[in-house]
Amino acid sequence: MSAKTIHFKVGNGDMTLMVLESGRRVLIDCKITFDADNPDHDAPDVGGQLRDRLERDPEGRLYVDAFLLTHPDQDHCCGLERNFHLGSPGSWAKTDDKIIIREMWSSPIVFRRADRKNAKSGHTLCADAEAWRNEARRRVKLFRSQGWLDDGNRIQILGEDADGKTDDLLPILISAGSALSTICGVTDTSFKGLLLAPMLADDEEEAEVLSKNNSSVIIRLTLAAEGNGEAGRILFGGDAEVAVWERIRDKYKDEDLAYDVLMAPHHCSWHSLSWDSWSQNREKAKVSDKARSALAQAAPGAVIVSSSNAILDDDRDPPCIRAKREYLAILKPGLGTFRCAADEPGDDPLEIKVGYFGVKPSRLVAGVAGGLATGIGGEALAHG
Image (cartoon, rainbow, N blue to C red):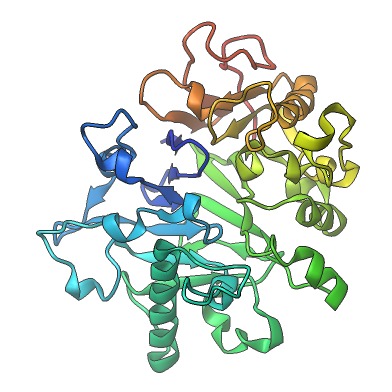
């Protein structure tokens, strides 16, 4: 059986559903706006598209097996309260018919972000992010009180927190550089994850540099398909910017960063590749060699996906035309493919199938892409 990833058209934001060979479904971020929920608006109904791709449990509840929030920005968690059940699974109501989150995957940094009432903080949470934080706290509190969790109450903490705050959570903690191989308390051989970040800063100076970026979960998920245990490696970077990618380049080997699919960080932002402002410096802006190298470990036939608005040759960032050009240059030696979700035909999301021989994105309508490094309509395969 093959696996697949589904990348919804959410503009500058992220929302990806992974369907594993085991049948389990993992959601990475969500952005379901009021416009997307409004049948009279022309925004794609991404909430409906997601629901159509989920299954119901014996109690009739739609569910995702795991929900990874890379970081608590609004464009990564919008619509959480309206569409997902939060609280004890026993309080789920058929009339609301919200989606059960069997297991949360969350950075611990979200616990330390201030809510909207604390206006003095530079890192406040929107309402949906507060709801995620509160639900994560509920599940952690439950674990601390009883020492175990069941579906609908489960959580895995991705990354250690400072000052030993997560030292008592080791059974549900994945440290940076460690493997992730369980969903809902069970080992699932159809995937394996390598957590790359968030990482604890080595000193106060580094902590200050990383302060606004280091909450993003960066993880590479390797999917099995049709007998190939490494059929597709998908690298997610949230909104991590240049300082984080430079540090990742210093810490990890090429093979740790190799990918068949890369979600272009921060919606194809230039700030993931450079310290310079694109709007101020344009072509004089310099690429960080370290950050680019971290993002350049593309396998032959790799696919880079920009979950963003259409990428135009202008001063906007994100998405940034110069970042797209760098990704095209990264892909060119291996005849890879660059795909922007906004360029997909109609309202349909971009689907990438993962089979024995690698990854294969759905075909684009001729002439739409304009950025295919393969020149063969996006049909290249990346071998795991």
